[in-house]
Image (cartoon, rainbow, N blue to C red; front, side):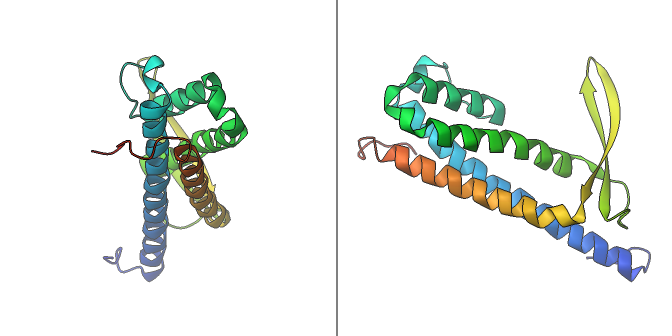
Length: 172
């Protein structure tokens, strides 16, 4: 990492922060890929086409699609509680991840043990500025939640896949 105006502490803070964001991005990709696998299984083996004309690829539609499939198929009823837990966690963590990866850091020195962010959102045809903070101490718990999310998605996908004819091809 390049030194910031020869300030060793700010350079260390930026390096630590960049690594933290990088781990969140990497772990999120792993978790969402497991959700993609679940969506593919539901689409191809559990009549997913009756809910949508195209397989969903954005997170919100994937979550909605999965909820509809789980609610409408009696074979999947035993997985409903697990899928609701998984999808709720995806929704909650998605907001945190989105804020951290799309927000701009406003200071490299922690303030009140937090990293401060600034973000412009667009709604109602206007830009709206907001600020938020992430407690430095929350980062390890956030990473643990993302790792757990990946595991939950992988396990659910695997268990539902066990109900299918294993000769089907989901990935081409």
